[in-house]
Amino acid sequence: MRQVLAYDFMQRALLAALLIGLAAPAVGTFLVQRRLSLLGDGIGHIALTGVALGLVTSTSPLLGAVVVSVLGAILIELMRSSGRTGGDLALALLFYGGLAGGVLVTNFAPGGSTSNLLSYLFGSISSVSREDLYVIAGLVVAVFAVLAVFGRELFLLCQDEEMARASGVRVRFLSILLAVVAALTIVVAMRVVGLLLVSALMVVPVAAAQQLTRGFKATAALAMVFGVLSALGGLTASYQFSVGEVNISPGPAIVVTALALFTVSAVLGPLTRRRAARAVRGPLESGRETALEEAS
Image 1: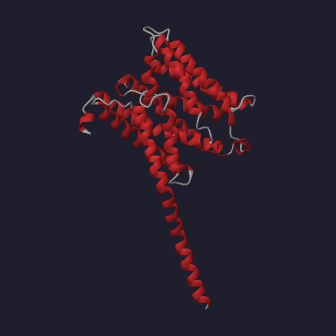
Image 2: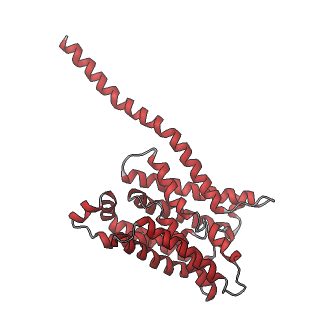
Image 3: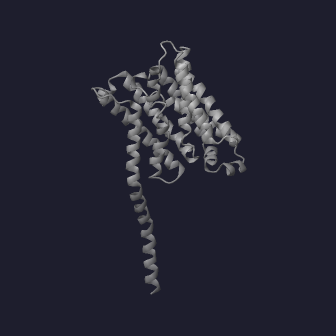
């Protein structure tokens, strides 16, 4: 571990991974609860067009991705809520449009080649600069600020949209806000995990936490723990295996680590539930035996 921390770029990458491991599952818990697990995939492909615009204009691809992905997220939510286009169809339209736009626009960049997009598609340890880290930290703070202020209303929205509307919750505003927060999270994570795999870090830790917990807050808390373990574990493994001839991208390594945690949780989940059931049944049976003894 000391060897890993000896390099500045690894310090920046690990710090970025820590922030992403916290933010992605926190937002993902709301998306999974609202059955919008694929929203991250759609926005990730839209963000690719923003990256390409940044390359063409020789400006920051990260900021370009922020602008385009936020606009795309708002468009998806408006198309979904209008009722004329289903949520899955809206995602599909922007999914393919974003991917095609990113590849096409990249060809007009100086030295234009789709190979320029690879580090954004699959993540790159060495690509996290100090400026990127500042942007990532700022966006993560913004994401958690939104969740802290609107968390209760977002929870009601994710439980039942009609019930939330009847309770006076601003459904359309909060739906757009959740989509924008998801877009910011995806842009934050694209440097380390990659746009094609970032959605997995929003969904898989949540699915793993659901195997072991009951209740929204407990699931969100454990999902963030799993997210941090996945991000830091996968990134460290990627570095270790990238030293030799074998080269492993950080994004796939992080996703495989998250899937391994899900597998362990899926195995342990039934065991912990049976143990909890026995713990509840024990006092009940003991009380029943006592009642029978007193009756006799």
